[in-house]
Length: 307
Image 1 (tube, rainbow, N blue to C red):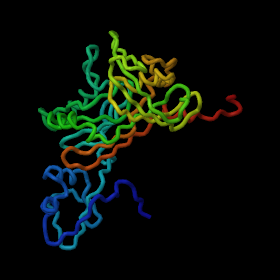
Image 2 (image 1 turned 90 degrees about the horizontal axis):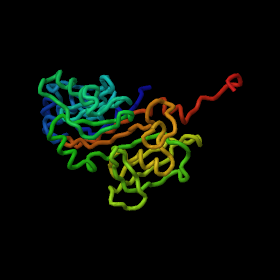
Image 3 (image 1 turned 30 degrees about the vertical axis):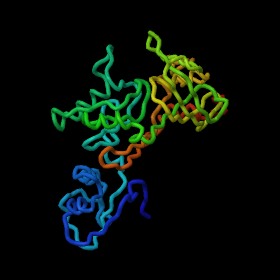
Image 4 (image 1 turned 60 degrees about the vertical axis):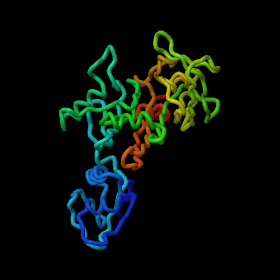
């Protein structure tokens, strides 16, 4: 039996009513708003003719041929780089799955070992004037999904329309202990001290209002796996607010964690849903929770000898 997966999801299906070349047909039927967006569908193996994947723009169509636009299959585009795996790329965007231990961009202390530099080296291979543009950041010891623009124009579109274009951006974390309420909201006001550490106040002290929603996925009592939806986007918001309610993220010594059993902060971006700024296609990306984090809330059973 044929295995049906997300890669087989049909977004649109059209029948050819006259002989035509595939690219001309797709443009005439306006399956996307621009010629480049349509060519991107072909490049990313999102077009099927009579059930067969086609990438050639000059494929000849006959009357009655069934042309399908498929949902993007991110596994076809994965490329591994130092510190990251590319899970999506077209003329406008690069979405990566970042490893813990790498800075997004350089600091005064470190200039070279950054995801930004790795991606710039990568895109320059196809054109020496190519570069990437930062859309958002993840801290060094945080892993997961991270997006970059390929032009200043795309960067500007995201900066002005982030909430409209990024429909979901789900953090997951293992925190110390078990929150009193399985699901809840943390609201506080954040300020930054002279050591660049964020401070949280339960009352309005003139700082930046921060709102974080959380939901329990699983708990052992000692540790709890939570999903987070950040209503506001402040520096270290999730980390400082979880410290303020007595459940710091495991491994986050900066914000109150008593230990670091997995040698990193147990914080990961596991889901990102983006509306492409030009094609308007909805792109959904999933990054598996790192095994070290999973093992904390799925402890290995001990044998009698180990006990």
